[in-house]
Length: 220
Ligand SMILES: [Zn+2]
Image 1 (cartoon, rainbow, N blue to C red):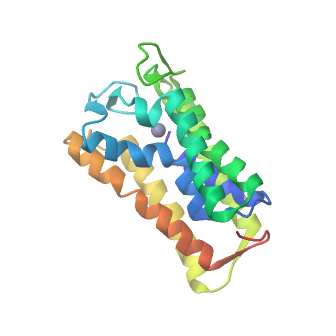
Image 2 (image 1 turned 90 degrees about the vertical axis):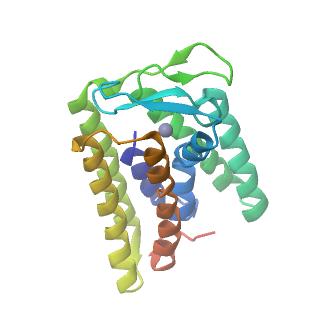
């Protein structure tokens, strides 16, 4: 899944945890933000295989550290601990852990059985929604649209930047999503990894947006 993870991050402004947008995006996308780093350093492996599922031309061969069930739980706990040490807010730290773990749940629904259970397990799981393009696109788009709706409902701009930046954020992601769906398969594994690294920019954009919008719940 791609923009669905961002939809969940945006939706979080509907809660009273006060977690910032940048933090929420970092949490929901944490597994995919680490994945290109692990791939580029040789810890994990994928290849380009058009038709792997009807939606994605990527074959995720080995990605236990970023995408196994065990890995996702450890990343969620680690994220929450660091958040708690910095912010000292228990409830928000728990929500952060759930947001990190939500990535695995959404990927479990969309991926073919390529998600390992532990770092070394042979057994892999995934319900394969990506093999049903219409259902996959509708599900993911709905999560994204509801997330955007809730974000706008629960925040308002403090200035012009606050109005413009959020639209840049949501439109760019929508364009990337559409390009992934209709574009040709990527030319190389390195190209995929480097473009995936660019998604870190959306974390920083999220913090920048939050600085220029007021939430109806306090930020901490
Ligand atoms: Zn993922």
